[in-house]
Length: 211
Ligand code: GAR
Image (tube, rainbow, N blue to C red; front, side, top):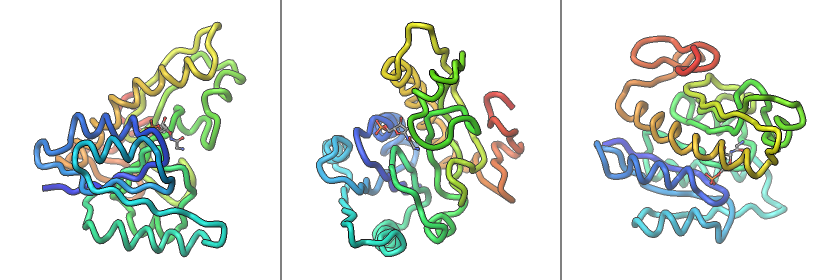
């Protein structure tokens, strides 16, 4: 059995995609969904299928390392094999990242290394990119810079705005994230010496898709 803890901050559509494809199937179990935001829809998605939920609010007086230490204690109480960041909108301390090194995944809405950080869809439109997308990667200390595992591309059309691009990218996210989670839980995917390895092959800078 592989235990997964999923961290969210919002709608949880990626969480839903992972529940639908992976939860309680083939030895994969989502043991907890943890959020820094109260009342987000992702919590309802988790509760509907009986997954434990924990809200870890951040007050103005909580500093980043105190918060992350508290989060680690809660996550570790579930003894996860994998930690999945699914729209968890916080910058993590190096200590937190180190603690889950090689067993924490993130999805980012761009074709990394392009457009790390926020507002990626608008930035891709502003840059007149013809192609945009999403990347699943292992989490390392530098923001959005860990080795890419899998990317999905979508076109940007002339008439697009950030909402239409967002929807197009999310549709792809919901395919590539559950697939990557499955690979990890099947023991096919790992990170060694800062590189993503799938089925014994070291992946290129764009991950499996585009080698
Ligand atoms: C996703 O689109 C994900 O790529 C993005 O947050 C969204 C969460 O949506 N993540 C980041 O921007 C991380 N830097 P969801 O709550 O519906 O899964």
